[in-house]
Amino acid sequence: MLLSRREYAKHRGVDDKAVRNAIATKRITTINGMINPEVADKEWDENTKHEYLAPVYKNEDRGNPVLHSTRDKRETLDLMLKKLDYEERLGKLIPRAEVETDVFNAARAARDRWMGAPHKIASQIIGKTDIAEIEQILTKEFESFLEVLTSCLRGNQS
Picture 1 (cartoon, helix red, strand yellow):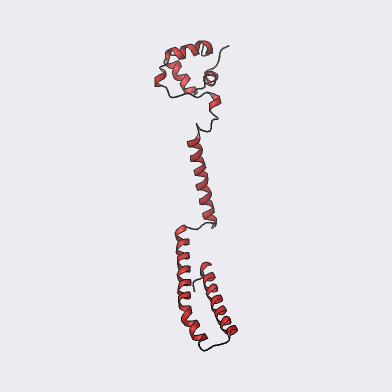
Picture 2: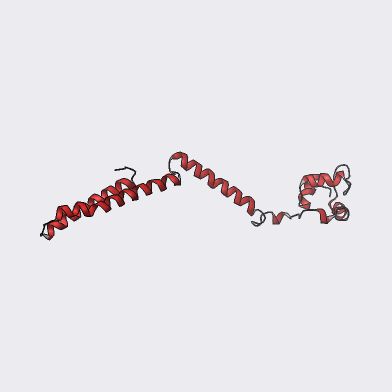
């Protein structure tokens, strides 16, 4: 049974270009442009210097995940980058530096407010003896502090 050049390439597990090259360099012979696979296989093995060839993988090896891991990793990375770019354009993502700046500013505002609290609270509770009244003053100041912190974290500078 004679095969076309493409059929022989599939039979051999090589690219059509490799078969064309083998025919052009007379490593295999053809009969009216068709290839006898039994004869061509013997000629291929006898006339090819195997030490100069890259490893050829049979069709069953082409599905091996190890053989394509680099390509798969590159494609996965490309998809991830496209997804990130898309989500950034939608406004779902913001630059990390911007977040770090906002968090730093919120923490600084909270710290400044908290560090000033003792002076403010001391002047309000001086001379007070009623525990409930002192607790109310402290609770009011803590709530005020937490409101400032929440406001800063939401992006509203105060």
